[in-house]
Length: 266
Image 1 (cartoon, rainbow, N blue to C red):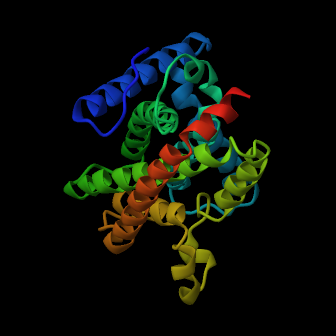
Image 2 (cartoon, rainbow, N blue to C red):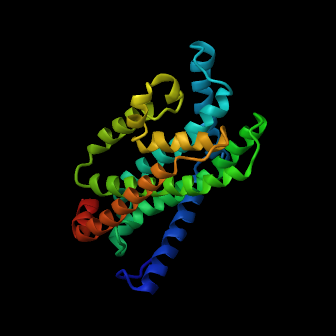
């Protein structure tokens, strides 16, 4: 990875994405080599979180809904994808210090690698989700094809938020703690372990669904558990805003490229 290039030349763009893929593969192999459980840990983590919430809300508080495990997984699995991706992306430029010191790479390369790693892991976790849904008699149907746009919209949202965090953190490293607190607060406001239809008045539901993760989780459940059409208007709105943020942040990171290099190497 010693070649320098400047976007947007088409050959350089192809080489850029090739480097992203190579770095994702390298990082995944490195992650696996550090864990005794290897690839299995990618699946165990959401299972462990699901078990904690199941015990607390279903067994102790008796607040679970029908088929609570399936309900939980439809919330936890998309949430973990979002939260882990954006947290790793926030530190991605700083963690890329070694590579930055050796060669030039556009700074959005680093959050894209973090997003790519999380996407590969999420593929295995979605298989787990489908297996559990099958056990609880939620069988695949033609309506499940709606998952494709839902997953793509979440990927766009993750990329947009990751770009913002990756840019901001080098300027104020302590902001990582505020980001963690914000994500933790968002967790409780996204309807992961409760149905917003049961706890909110109808006039408050539209406000709740303005939270993009709450909206996406609701759409996952509509498709997978209710066999219903997702809220396509809100999906389109999330996608458009995410794309605009990605474009703007790509230009911002390019403008501040030298500054980000200096901050990463400090």
